[in-house]
Image (cartoon, rainbow, N blue to C red; front, side, top):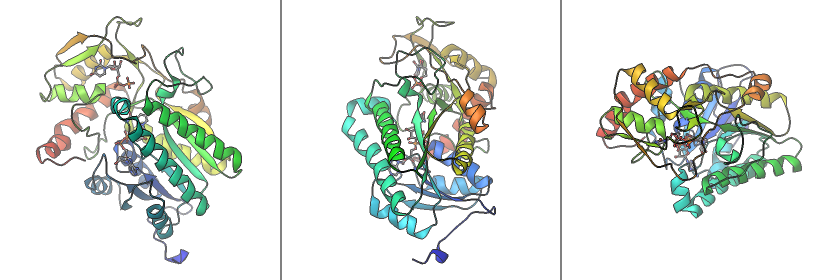
Length: 356
Ligand code: NAD
Ligand code: UDP
């Protein structure tokens, strides 16, 4: 196909066309909105294994037009077709499975999907001379034996196959960056993304019973689940419950825009934590949700969950100093937006029996 005939939706002069693998998912959809708002052209390649084409319409409703393809990122041929159709300048790679418990039960499914998706994407990027990739990694790579706050220079290690897929992907990116001078991977280690878009159009829609704290609280609040189980109140923390760094998904999405801007001006690999730098306990999150939304969250204290660390929160100084990015939204806003989403679109979608 002739390069001149390639499709673009970008608005700003000098803005780029960005491919979002897994762009219909929770974090990808919010990032798509921020990129479109900044004038970038957005192309989504998602196999909808944990989302739905319906999300594309919602992104368009919240921000504007984009191109979307039902493509498995592990399928080189199909990805090549997307690169032929668009002049892709950079990739944000969200595609992957993310359920820790399922990864313990079905490790091969996780290694196969998460590694193949990255490797195929990198091969096609090389064919088309696209040198920039922003990669979704996780705070889980800091393992269990570190002192908080976690900084990017700390040792890494994992306790479950999902986490290992992230670490192995980081290593693959590091090795390719060593081999190819122009290659610029920016690794973003997310802490605990929560909340939803304030338009009420986008949010997380976990399949089945949620594993994560905030979606579980949302479903207790709506009466779908009876009560929250708090996994342990005997940790060495302020109130005995586990501490995490919850970050509003819109702040997280904005971090990707900053990472892309950074990558335009730098070469080689860089790693950034994306968190707020503040830790909240499970009890504090329950209380914040109750106060922000005027609802009651019944709970019981149960045993610790295997593999959980007592405390996890980010040292965010590198992202602040180098990317010029900082999370802005409060825990109260996270709770309010999460509840608006749970009460609105998400509950209707569930009643209509289609997942997004
Ligand atoms: P998500 O499941 O909502 O989104 C992932 C998207 O990728 C989904 O739309 C899914 O259909 C798609 N997908 C999966 N495998 C694919 C493949 N082979 N080809 C094409 N599309 C594929 O998850 P999310 O919460 O938006 O997470 C995005 C990324 O961030 C993931 O890589 C995840 O591991 C990582 N991450 C998430 C969290 C979190 O708590 N949500 C924390 C740290 C890191
Ligand atoms: N948690 C809990 N009950 C739940 C889910 C989570 O008490 O139903 C706790 C968990 O032990 C941890 C915190 O909430 O201390 C955040 O858990 P989540 O799974 O959301 O994130 P992660 O542990 O993966 O960082």
